[in-house]
Length: 116
Image (cartoon, rainbow, N blue to C red):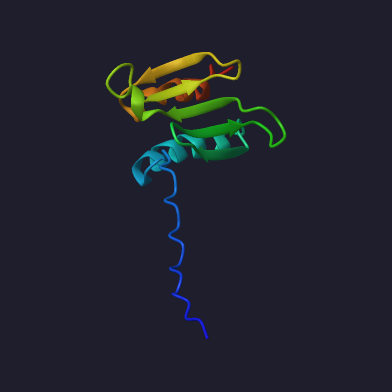
């Protein structure tokens, strides 16, 4: 009879770090999103968390490309600011250190002239 030594359980590999929006950031983004949904401008959104950035994508319809992307890139914190709003064509509409200031570019889309 041979005695086998027990094999240890394999240690799980650690999950890769991911950048994500915290609760306060999501609250700011969703308040702007809710106003635009109420105005009938936007209808859907998607959130992605990746190793180097987090993205909140805003859609007019579900099956389209995003109208806007709100990105959080912590590596740019010391330089241009870690928050950015990217337009449909990939152009950077606004970049900065404060999320609520960066999102003001989207609120301007809600302001329209009133026809009398």
